[in-house]
Length: 164
Image (cartoon, rainbow, N blue to C red; front, side, top):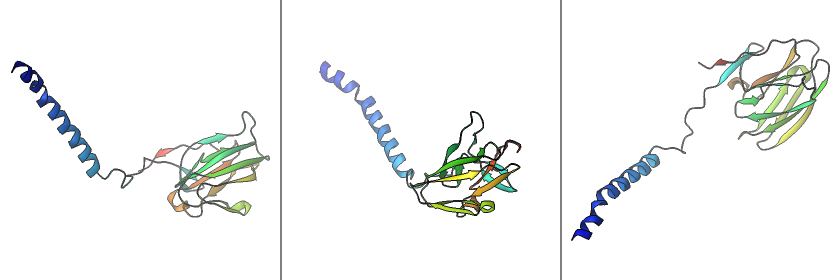
């Protein structure tokens, strides 16, 4: 009888832990996680030619003198959002679409309009202006803040502000 009591003594603890585990599994299954991604992470924006752009960094191609950069095209933003280069030089941007939809890279001042399907890449050679900069954007998602800039160093650095 004594051995039986020792074996049964831990049963309420084991049953309680199993109950909690079952509740946790059931709770996560019913919560819908995976069914909907939830709200997007808080975005920071910068002003690009009077329009809001979802800010995901700046790449400086001046120091050391680099001739190009990778630009990730993701859903609703470019990474980096701003590329700074040496004035009156050519830079090479490799556009990699890491999003789920076809994205676009357009610069109206240079008559550039290039689609990049999801999972693909395109490489473009672009001039860095002597003064000011060029605005680039995705023509499909510009209204959602998918835009950026190619600047020379005389342009002020962007300041990111939290989205409302």
